[in-house]
Image 1: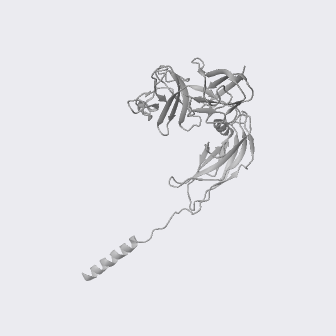
Image 2: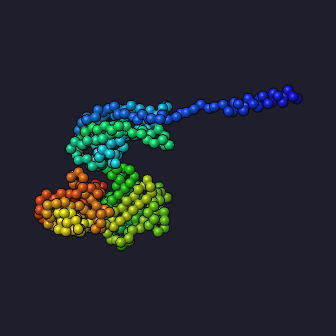
Image 3: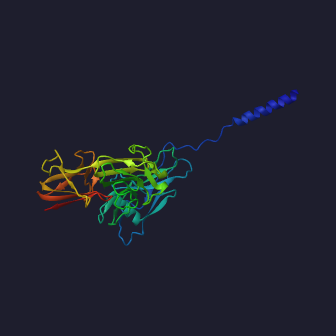
Length: 354
């Protein structure tokens, strides 16, 4: 018995020692990570995109792999920016390889979405975003700048249909839609609603389908939250109509906003300078805002509801409007008719001297 006890003790000890054996270490991140590095196309390379070559490959982007200190399945995303600081970053392509082809059509559409002027060469800043794990922060390559001239092309933006009591609950009405100009599941648009208390829903498709209907999960219809699918829950309810409403729907965050707007013109070129607005008049026939008035040399901007919360200017001097953008210059005094067009995904204006 004593011998058996000794043998049992030895076996138990060996098992404990085996259980305490140190496991292999790693993988561990390097103390200093090596980001990817763009190797082609060369910085400063110029491209001209036309209707004739839009289906061709513009360039094959290549890069050196990121080094995390261990073998990894890294996802690389090629991003571009027109501002250079990537506050307007737009993703061109994603891959686990170290190269990707970019078509002229893809680059052209992306540049137009970002506000590039057709027929004008534009500096395009490029970088790579590398992600190896959701628990590890993304790392970025050094930037490289190329020059690209896009061409004018009608862009079909992703859209949500907005049926409601103001338009007969028509699911397929192409005139009552809001759009995602960056194709990022964030939609916006302006619609005239002729009801005192408008009610509406959003549709991903021009039909009433349970999975594609979006509404408010709360019975009040005023929660600001979206119910996506399941017939969308309840109608979204606005107030203060009839009027011209800005609608926003963020499908990423499942949130919505609406605000009724009245538009005015303000600036040093207007009769009251920057002190107060000159009211524009809305036409329910054309869905345009217009004003005719005398202007002096100076600047103007458009703003809603006599406040700066919603204001539009022109950063590119290309007759395209952006929120909080630069003042619009009036070079000569005279009588002008000014038109504000918020009917399309890209907001525009016209200034005509009478």
